[in-house]
Image (cartoon, rainbow, N blue to C red; front, top):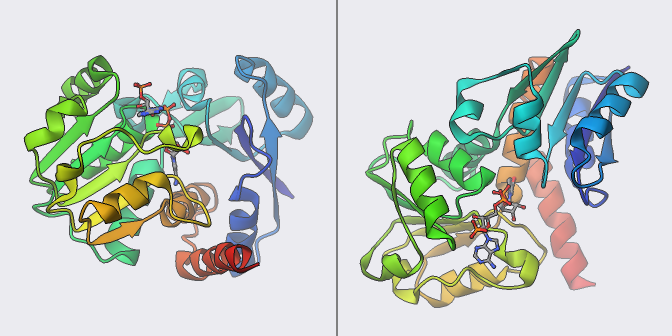
Length: 274
Ligand code: NAP
């Protein structure tokens, strides 16, 4: 049986094993998919053990190892090179190929599940880490009117903006800016907060998406709603959509994301009702 993994730290609460199990069931594919927690700073050692003991066919890589995975690969796709992050590993004999499906997953979720049009849209990405850069790279192929990367540390926004050909700035610079779609690609939710952006930035926002997901609205979703965003979403849809892209890279089959998303969302809703 082919073995797949999701590598991160911490990773034991990852939904990826459940998602890939549901994808595999759609095609009657027999595969195992497990979590692997690597010590921070221990990506290379962890990979050596994993490859020696488990001979994986593929793996997902999540926080905080996406950059380590990018550096580890023998070959990466152009889109992974653009954002210097890898979330999908494909093991081909002794070679390791790396790709990133985060951006494509976001685009698919927003256009297909949410029904939003990216063509001509003014899009603000908050955060210049692996996820923010991945989104910017994918959005560049969608005909957006404007893509702006804003980050808590402005130098990082400027360096991502220069590398990807997007506008960039600090959160304070957003005071006179308006956007149709606003995405929170920061990890501010880990500290229980929304990124410190001015409320007025949401005044013409039709869709605000937090890449973080939870059973209850996140601080960013609350801020966006209170500040005038018409629709707010969390990152569960993107999680399922980026997983589907990884699954397709490994198996050549594109799963149906809708029933998987609906099942996970129902489980979240049920946990709130308890
Ligand atoms: P990362 O590379 O570590 O980058 C973190 C980003 O968050 C940086 O831009 C950082 O800004 C910013 N940040 C951290 N704390 C902040 C705060 N208190 N206020 C404002 N900005 C803050 O992480 P990543 O891989 O890009 O992931 C970012 C988020 O997206 C995470 O929450 C992750 O779980 C989520 N994500 C979700 C999916 C999904 O499928 N739904 C996929 C990928 C990522 P500085 O540069 O100033 O430090």
